[in-house]
Length: 339
Image (cartoon, rainbow, N blue to C red; front, side, top):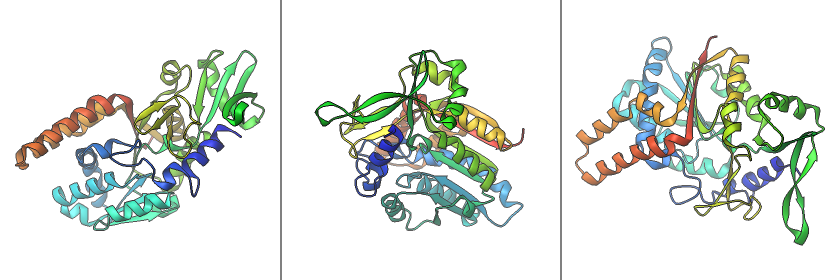
């Protein structure tokens, strides 16, 4: 089978999938994202989005915010809490929608957001006209193919049953014309030996999102780089496997119990945006984005309002992690309509 099929089963199998079961997800698990670190991440994004929402509400009664792949719902909770505290009139007129495929994650989100004005959708059409679409580590959870460029062309690294009944990779020539057309965009930047993880579905979904919803702003936060940097940085591919806080080399060791991820080619989103009439407004690492979005000002407010020194210290440490640790690995792409 293709590695894409294997990854789909390992992460999303209805009974045994890593995300479906919720295995390892949360503050103690391998699936640990920026919203898990501290609410200041969501508060800062909410602060950044506030002028857009206020402008939207000058022209219409409601402002729709759509979050893609919302994990356990921490970003939604923290953003809504911020707007309720800092801009109650805006909060009253927000429709916050969550796009989620996992029944287990929906259950967790609904429990966390029971007292918040949130709704769940399965189709982009239900969020048409949204003011804002944002996501955090949404696209890197898409099942990906693995390819390797050889002297004779592209090979697909497929999953086979090898000796001793163990799974392993084996290279096969790529013959699918659609995949070959897709891979042609990488040829000018690659040499024989380059390994590449990529999900063509990413570009298709992003284009469909823009064509269907036509949001006023899209904010994508994820592991990744623009194409040329990505290929230089990961000549052997960017596939990563995490099991109980340990990094593994073998993606077949603990199927359904380990998190599989890869670094996103942000150029795919940029190209899909250009085709749909969107321009790239910003592309930078998460640390720079959060600084410009006002995370230090949010921290100052915490310092003034929070009487507990332990909570103030927790917020300071969170800023350090979000800006200098996660902040160096994650990238933020902002797109808006226009050429």
